[in-house]
Image 1 (cartoon, rainbow, N blue to C red):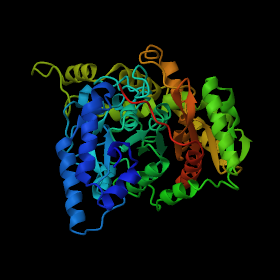
Image 2 (cartoon, rainbow, N blue to C red; image 1 turned 180 degrees about the horizontal axis):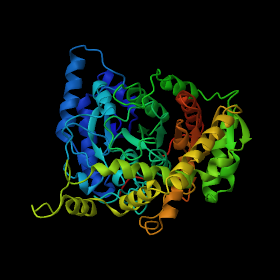
Image 3 (cartoon, rainbow, N blue to C red; image 1 turned 180 degrees about the vertical axis):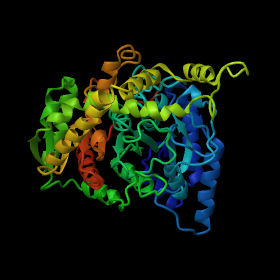
Length: 492
């Protein structure tokens, strides 16, 4: 049998279901792989080997007893360390939560456990999911398996790198401004952001509540769809959860894999053409677009004039919401506490705790957000940004009256060298230039590999209307069927 760590999640599920390998054997293969390479990749912050072995054994025993099991039972998964996991450290990549072990599971984790997936551990991220390179983790950066001198994207670089390094066949990420799709693009993997409210935020450590969306990361489109189907669905514990049935994303992915896109209209966003993407990125994107037209799709140029304001609007809305959400980390209720010697006032303890516990990017965004929400500035900044958000939503609505999906590169450039942009926040923020509009709108989007530039992966983004997640999976699977998947070189 070929190496279990090189198989897709769908293949592993079949191998386990047919008795060719047990869930325990599959889990041990991935734990061994993590032990072999993660000292160089640093995709994981915590490996729960004991919990993974117990979960795999439970699947094997239930299968032997003839119990009905889900389609992904026994398949290992890594979970971004901003998602609460009962009894397993959840740090959000921050010193302020170091050692915290939640007493409950997030809804998406509950659903994976119920489906029989085996959680390997928690993956690295930019602190509180604030970043585009996973260099802002308080526990050190993650490295791109394609080139260990380069970033794996962010904020969910650990989840993407674990896939590219064959440490896990599936991972879970969260997408606030592109944090699933951008890492997928620069690591040659698949990252999908579901419709906002289609997957529950209950149990996520909140960054920006009107934007945060948990979603699947995988090496193939079908695998992403299979995990999406497990994660999604209404949750009464999340007030923003949509009480609608989950679209048939798995069926759509399998339909798309047949390679027929006859009658599908692809919207090419005119405003993205002038944003200065690297020539190699645009060349690979154009090749992907040509591949889709050969499958029967029609390309229509559409104008979304307010997309150019998405980046500044996002960097007012997201910091404002993070300023509010992170106020709970005060050194009083839970987490880190600094300076509490019985002599200092609570205000001083709070200040010392936040100074020691938060990293530079988190502090930057909290300060920006607090300023934008302050008296006399709310209407000028946060209020105006929300008006821009409404205009961007109208652009999407108008565009989807003409086309079925919108397409663009996922990110303007390939993975850049570690340390090359940390001193220039604006250049770092540009990594999310093409992904942010979808978050402001709330619709689904997916990144699929479409080729290489300078020997590094390029991502192709497909954006769909809200609740039309199946539509993006169909187009994504068709693209994958035409251009294939990408395989990084073996880590030396």
